[in-house]
Image (tube, rainbow, N blue to C red):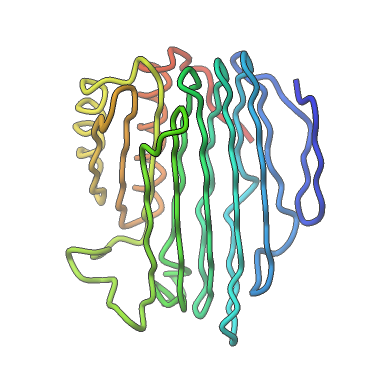
Length: 252
């Protein structure tokens, strides 16, 4: 049940669907993307006993700017004791010359459960715009029971530092992160995922249980097909082995 919702353009909160005992909501961003000076802010609270699946309608395009202003994307997620939140986001696509500042703040109670999956593209690679954005300033924070458990922070500025070096993006056009907080997340699950994903051509991964009940995965993929396949396999394994709900897959 969606107990409270408020949205201003370009956001739209549509109908809530039931999937596998979860409230499934597609968060629609009805605009053509984000431009310099825009600020998109989302705040989501999952109360105790609720199970929520959030997905985006499509990839988020970040448009070029000729100024030093950046597009701003700020998300806050609060998962209360006994709540469960699944977020499976489409990629962010920075166009050549785009500037983006994005902040994701995930706050989960000790007894809350979380699945998070996001992806950043190099740009419109088919048009020769791979890693030609002006700058991307990214931060993803996860706190469990008030303690910081995972912090991902980077700034990409291709004109200042080459991103195609082997120890950075290399040949990859997709960069992704998966976070799982659940009491059934184990090192065995991480090892299984590592092995399964290493079998996918064009994918480099690192998956580990970094803390009790906290699994972290980082992904590099050369193509959209390999990235999508890796994310699908990851989601299927985690839903089955950790959450025990293989039916909880987003459908459009």
